Image (cartoon, rainbow, N blue to C red):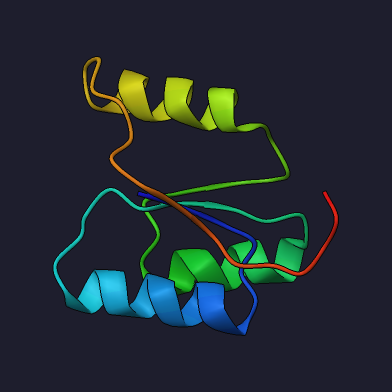
Length: 79
């Protein structure tokens, strides 16, 4: 799964996913300090602000060709 932007909801989602046993969690976040927290919280991969296609390509490379099953994005930003 990929979590885009690690605000309050994204951080909670990351923690819930880790506690539920998810192992391949990607986080995309522009802020360096939030990327550091994502790694501490258990994200498998942490990226600066990249596009969804790049996320899927990186995930597929890690998992031998499998695509993402879900992407979660909670934000009120207009991006």
